[in-house]
Image (cartoon, rainbow, N blue to C red; front, side, top):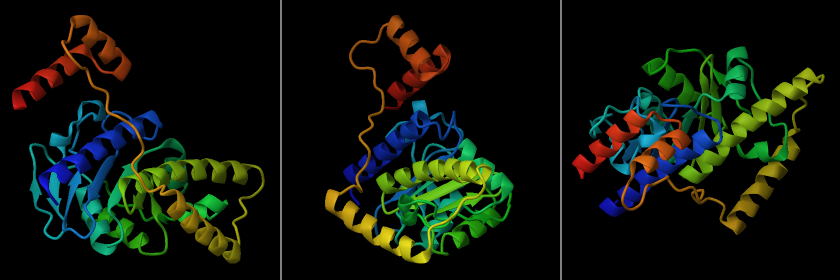
Length: 264
């Protein structure tokens, strides 16, 4: 994977982070995202404790999937072990998204399984809740990666959140959105008297239809979200307006802009 391709992949991670915030799946520095080039033994992951609004492609941390060795200006996400374990157990997975969205986290706290309730859910499979383990621990990495070998592309983390995987960032992002939507449907259906899953035959037919449909329309592409940028001369008014729009303090934005300029 060339330097240009690596930079592009890292920029996609940046944009996915902004998309997760826009969709309401994460806030501030919560959650984490990683991606690897198909067939390679390294991945890029979001750094620990960094606001998604301030991330650039140069902030991504490179991590070796075999050894766990890291390379970058920041510490990797505290959940890096979880990402590495998933890549080790699922050779078909090239992107991992972990979020703490409210409805998915609610089902995870109840420690329930979201069955395949609608046709689109067949793409993911039953979303089980992995046993509880402390955040960032090897134990959490083990139980989550194990759950993802059981015929599903998403899993809930007991009393924590959710993880969705995909063959690329676009697919992982779509599934991350679907997990939250399916959690809402599951909770609402349960309150209305029962969440009745599709039978095995319906699930198989839906899987075949979705595979053919998405291959035809080439849906597995990165969503067209562009990271916000300030172009040209920057005035004090620009900084104030942008910081208000992004939900940042003026001081934090000014610091980030100065720091990034010094690093170039």
